[in-house]
Amino acid sequence: MDEVVHIDQANTQWLKIVVQRHGWPGQSLVGRHGAAAAWLLVQHADHDPSFQRRCLDLMATMPTGEVEPHHIAYLTDRVLLAEGALQLYGTQLQQVAGVYQPSNLANADSVDQRRASVGLEPLAEYLRRFLDGYT
Image (cartoon, rainbow, N blue to C red):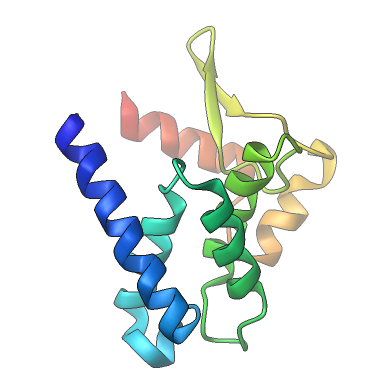
């Protein structure tokens, strides 16, 4: 696990340099797979929440087609929870009594509308898929 943490931190440092030099690496700069890889690095950079916030703010200002909307949703939830706020899309889960559920979800009654607006499946389907993947 120490090696994974070290690699993760090194990757975050590398991405910080990329972001400093080029801004957020959108699809026109690095392609669809490269943009997804950059998002995945920052999504899991929990050791540096200020960098996650900075990247989220940059991603949110990118022109349409540069960033996948669902990537913004996942990072939004991650950042909001780290800042002590409620998540909007229900992407970040916790296990309670053996059942996965969203951590600190705002306005649960309208979560499926917010999820649909960024191309995510309904929350119940996500929870089923998540459970199927981990059982």
